[in-house]
Length: 299
Image 1 (tube, rainbow, N blue to C red):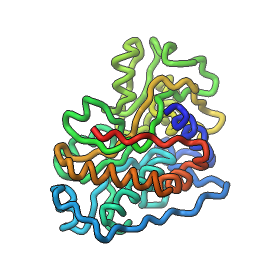
Image 2 (spheres, one colour):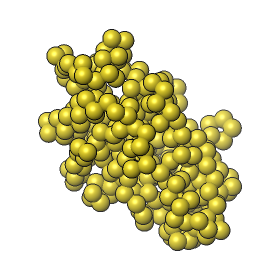
Image 3 (cartoon, helix red, strand yellow):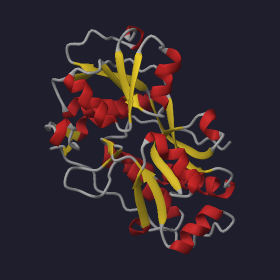
Image 4 (cartoon, rainbow, N blue to C red):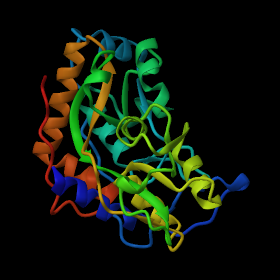
């Protein structure tokens, strides 16, 4: 899995062009890179899809739309650029790929911004049918939601000022470290690096604003996301480059809908087998030639 994590981190930096700050000091969505981008994938819709044993699928089919929770502020993964209303990134492509196998076309997907703290409540309350939002699979979350996947694995790292002497998580004692409330990276800091002072917001862009102003000493989340911000603010920040976890990203689903979980797992596996996963990756993150796809965990 390390091979996948490092590949994602290295290609994510090529996605973003240097840009300034938005109003109020909030970082703008990254501009599109100057390099050639892979052709936008098209996913064949499975018109014969029938998963009536799934309560979630049946309700979505009856409504004519699949409600998907995604991030809006994570470059290369789930992001809405300035002036746009449509999210884009690898998570979005995974959502389209899965939706197609479930019988939904792209225009039948309804995206909802889903921050780390509200992913479980949104699924439990029926606000969304699935979450594709850099959602780390872990045993604690499995108590309240189900997961399909993983569809890739990342690693937690640190974003710091370019002249910072922080070289890894062991240097965080007495430092202010920013992450997103309810996220796995925030939990890791609280549980494993207790001498650090955690600052938590609802989005990573707010953490980056604090890092710019010097209000915090580091931002922590998955390395692919951090490298996107480092490229966006080239010369201001650097990624420490010492990942200290592995984070398997899964598709979050309502608890107990086994038929839906199996259908999504099958959709992910099909995409890996027929090349759609690779197309989604290369369109969003760059070359997948050296990327090792993760193994589906059918628990």
